Image 1 (cartoon, rainbow, N blue to C red):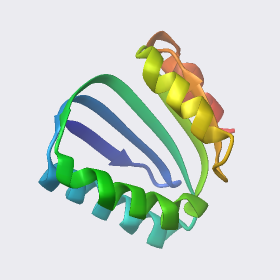
Image 2 (image 1 turned 30 degrees about the horizontal axis):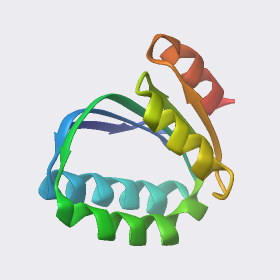
Image 3 (image 1 turned 180 degrees about the vertical axis):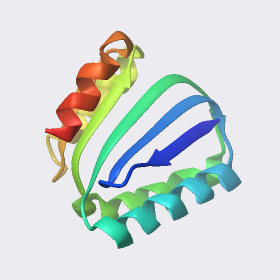
Image 4 (image 1 turned 90 degrees about the horizontal axis):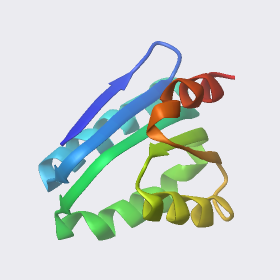
Length: 117
């Protein structure tokens, strides 16, 4: 399940808490694409509480989307207590154009403040 919202300043926040289906993924990508169209560069907060099964049909489209859209992300906070997600995020941050930081779940307010700086 993904809960998604964009504010009037181009701050995108979504929460993942459970399995992700292809239709749900497609809906979120369309929302993010619309926000990019409206705001240009986005600032994102990704909260990962629990990540269940991810539809295998998502993997390749997501890699292609990221390759062409990461230039539209200015800053991204990944908020999670899942150690492996933090490690992957830190490794990816070294090669991605966006400014990316990992925060723990209790620090979500700090993550939101950092994204808005």
